[in-house]
Length: 246
Image 1 (spheres, rainbow, N blue to C red):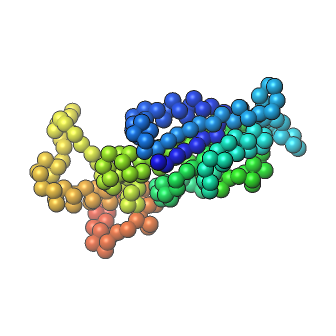
Image 2 (image 1 turned 45 degrees about the vertical axis):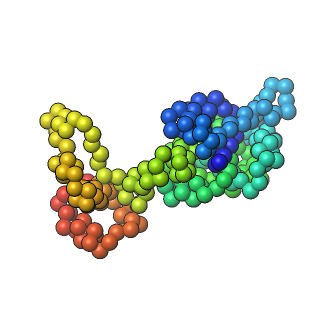
Image 3 (image 1 turned 90 degrees about the horizontal axis):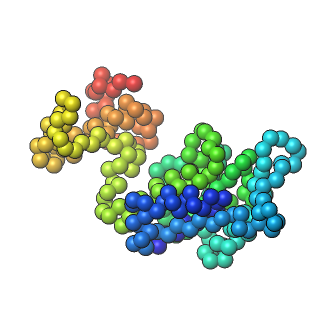
């Protein structure tokens, strides 16, 4: 069973969010385990303070190293060699490739910062990976941690029910996913592409691949240089330049 540990000031935020839908079912079936550890439980002062003013002055508060370290040790005593991920805008960007990399780990520990961040010494002491969801700042690391746990869990065998459930999803092969349709066949005058109603699986697969190529070229052309494309697919995109509108 893949196990996720989250060091946080708001354990209820983690557990409540991840107790529903696919994530909730995966936990009930024993495919993944999620444990939120309240950093505040490891303070050594009566007020349960976890932060203090930064040395050198400045605005805001910094999370102290001691309660974070002790919270981490409560996990380290049970699991060995777990990667510790600190959610920070300074980290490497999170991508589907990183999700696949992390899915190969048996245990993952997430450190969720708050205020102006955490004491640099705790990063030096326990953190193995710094990861960012993007070039923006949130109030805490809980939402990024939840996002990564969700993305990684989907790659755990059995979580999605079928092993090929995520095979055609966006970014699985470096491209965006093709458009999807369901009933009714006509909605507000817009019809489902006729080929999807044909029942011809080979033609449908070809159409979907082409739509995936076109959608990526239109919406995320930055992905194409790293996508695995055949010479035929590259030629297809060249011939369809008029259909690719920014």
